[in-house]
Image (cartoon, rainbow, N blue to C red; front, side, top):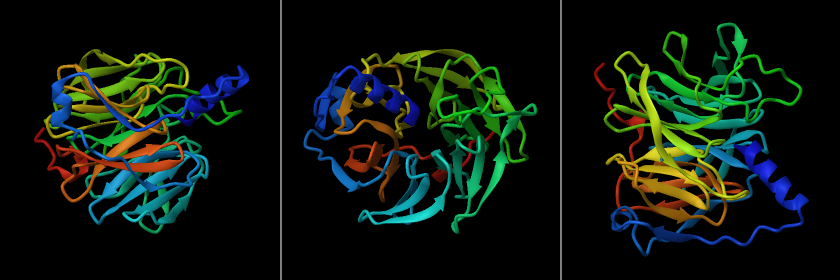
Length: 319
């Protein structure tokens, strides 16, 4: 995602335009929006001074892991904003915990999915499909079957390195290390998430500015792909990127201006307008009703009225 925002900034500056100041705000398109977000909700900054934040992962012990794609590090960020380096790693991106509460990261420079222990040591879980290197894994989520699902666009393909796969895919990685291609129909797959009941799989296409939904099958494959929603906008406004769902199946997806909230039926309920463009988000807090946003140079939080769905804290679905 960093590559998209860097390109947009270059275009804006190159035309002599300065971006207008942005402020936090709540813009409702439906009364349902106010059942999820309090009208008096206040955005708080948790920590600043980052280069470009991504991949937030909540730990019930009360902290977040946050990727910094500019400083090339993953930090442990406490509730009071204290930052502790976990690992120095070239361009870390989206992350999640697996079912064993182990940190899984999309390592763009390594072109791999890796697992990182609490001491900052990592192992590569997968870096190829059918003998060819991945492009630059971008975002990752644990599925209802315990497998790891991830997107592999060319957004952060290392300069000078060759693209070996002739497509940008969505993949499944099982516990035995087997990598399965789920779909290659998206032009730039990015954020991805499962519905709380494990029956729907969402993935957005940053280039096409849309969100797709699939029926998730018991064998870990996808079926019946269709457009769920569109997030149109101008240059510098932001694109569909990170996404999370709440316990009722509403989607919270980065987009132009901030976070777009969608009903399970595909209605755009409203937008959380952000002072910095968010790239990703995570549910946290004691009741999982706090949204944490990784937005450019900062990490923010916002209390909501409804708890979030956190796959690695849920029992696995029966398949």
